[in-house]
Amino acid sequence: MKEEPEGKQEQAKAAVADRYVCSVCGYVYDPAKGDPDGDVAPGTSFEDLPDDWICPICGATKSAFEKEQQHT
Image (cartoon, rainbow, N blue to C red; front, side, top):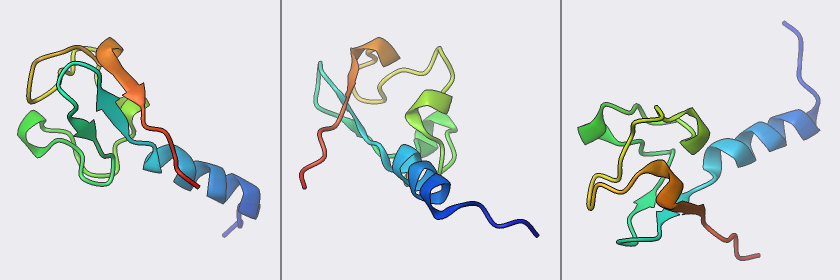
């Protein structure tokens, strides 16, 4: 089995970990949890959500979401 360079592994983890916040209602899409009510499996990144996915709270489209700022 071929090992990926550590940099790529870290990038992949970071991409999956990116959370997005609905600018309308404040709902946070967390890829670690997915959206069980919307049939989105845990581990699904925001970018991989279907284009017709909507906020489960207010019904806003994906375009209303902004990447959550990481506090370091």
